[in-house]
Length: 162
Image (cartoon, rainbow, N blue to C red; front, side, top):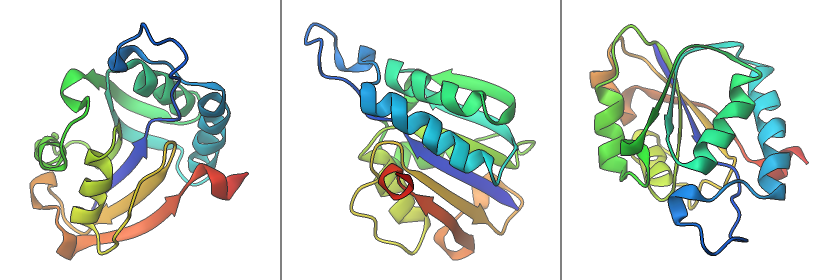
């Protein structure tokens, strides 16, 4: 069994127009939603094998909320996840080491929404900022994850918890 938890970074700020997209931090709403969402996930999951996050400022800041609530065996921040397409995300996931049975992936849209739609039987219009999707795969290898062996376990958005 493989478990993939997909998290879109929390709401980011456009306040400082001198910052490029990669360097935008979380805004006030993002800093409120992060603890809400990490607390929600930590109520059902206390340990995850691998946190794999985009290295952008907003994804890094989002990851810290989860790191404070959940134990991770390994953490990696990766430039390749920054605005990555769904096909590239899928390739990256399929290449995760088999020693990881659970992965929390923090990245960006539209790649995440398209990834979720390609791995499950739902048709999500948009994974909102801070949104969490938990998918179990009835297989023993990341290479074998597919729609056919996926089971959508949970989907939760910040506005549902306020």
